[in-house]
Image: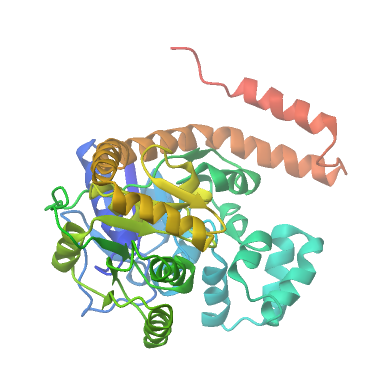
Length: 434
């Protein structure tokens, strides 16, 4: 197949890092692959992920070529408009296979409105078109500031279906949000674990030491629940001697808030690194004894930081919710999705006290991650879905035509005749036996 792989590709993008590895694997499997960058701007000063494949930026590319020259256009969709601004024009230009890295893409939707100068009327119209008239009060509440909690917005207006309906096929990284894609995408939908390439210099087993290090990596926003961890550490004599290290971008406001909380609860070993390069991240993973990858609310389809924790061979603490809840119970340490501080404290105390448990679980988690989160396995899953997408096109084309005619005749969507016609089309277009 000739594949156009659409992705942010600047070095800062974790989706770009995954894309570089998966695109390479697809090329190794015999496909012709080109990378089409979808960042809003093409900044020549921004370094890109290394690749031997052709790379273009969507603003300098004739998008009409997508339909004419490629068998499959794979679009990586995340909740960051500056990184994904080009996906809208690309979805309009050709039938696409959408990879939904986040199940909550309201921020992408909001950015699309803002950068295109669209007002509240378009905001409400898109939400009603996606979820029906009953969603109008939620649309008004969120744009007017009455609904500010991200968990509540994710419950009512994740906007996943908004773009899934514009895709010919869709890929999820966890089962919990696959039904949203299936409800909106007319074509095939598949689920496969996130690809998380192993690092070139993976850390070895944690070294024996008297002072253990607990580590959280990624962008330090409030839904990472770092404050809950600090409260758990500060309220336990068994944990106060540990180091808690934060590795990843953090705002000055969030840094000050967390430092003030640590002082308030009497926890003196908070270390905030901020943003770091890959070499420093490797070193911090090597120094870690326990990885903490909590989320509330869960907004992403999968978590790179949780996958990194498992690949590092460290015991990893997660919430029992969304993608995290689907990880094998024996490979991670789950706390309730509500993240009760007392329960979190008990889990951490258990891990700090039991070195053999930490080592055994960490090694098992790394073995599982190496087998399930690698680029070769992910490329195979994308390839399989793309093949189903291509072979489904005649069925989808006929279905759209007949559906339009039935709708014009006034046949309701829930009419039993519609189900019978759909089943007949499925039989007519079923693959021939090999």
